[in-house]
Image: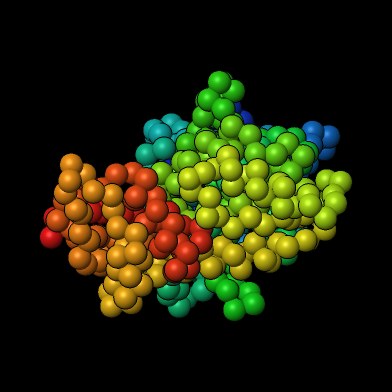
Length: 423
């Protein structure tokens, strides 16, 4: 039909997956657009299906109805090459009951003959018809001009781009969308017991209890050998993009399965991109426990993630709402750790004393002297150590320095970078 293509054009992005296969869009997908200086939110929905028993189609139908309820105006997209179908009639009946402003949009109008064919859509009784081509963009200007007249007249400020962004990553069916639904208080994302339900990356702004941030729910990341169809490949790519645009990654693992190789791959991907990391061990309510279970499980995780094991681990149960808000508090702490600036004087006071007590080992009879330390701007906390022979600083001593920094300063959950330079 072209809904996702139009969404991508209006938001000037490629956020929504576009494919020839019908039913690709499952969740409501949100994006920001502007026209003539007026900002507004665009929501891409899954295709509305009447009377289906399919678990996805019934969930999509519910999502579409929620979106209609939320919307200030509705673009009813129709295919000029097929005319009015029984399904179109059924949707038109739903839209007439909604009492919302509806814009009938005839898509795929690529020539004068097809333009004349759009007149048939007046029979739906929903007002003027707007011929467009979502692929080329023709006709979208007239559509937006008309839409702006029914939206709020005052300009809306674009969303704050500096708020923290938390990406929820993990294997399929681990509970990522359920976490967002609990935090938002609404069934914003489709949740089913079928792995891989979420295909797009969904952005949700959260502003409660004195916290404001953006949550990014992503499609589950699978091993490459299991990524066989194009749609799943695009889902994985969007998960990686979500990770790249985030500040903190909430890596959710299944308590019943434990930390496996795919979880470790995701962890190292986040570490490589210098993102803050919080590990959520979900479905903890399903584990038989004694007074040592938590510490044993946590120690196993840290051992497998070494050497970067200074990571907060939160044991959660989404259905029981156990420690969900603790996970968010920890994400905020990691975000602040990743952005913190340590004064040069404090850094030198603390670290030079440690270095004097435990200096770098001498190499070829030459003593290595570290004279001065400063923090520099970077994607994560980055420190420069000025010394006389930086080429002789070996990896074990670098790890010692990193561990001392983590012990003396709160750098929990964030990678750090160390540079050794000639004085």
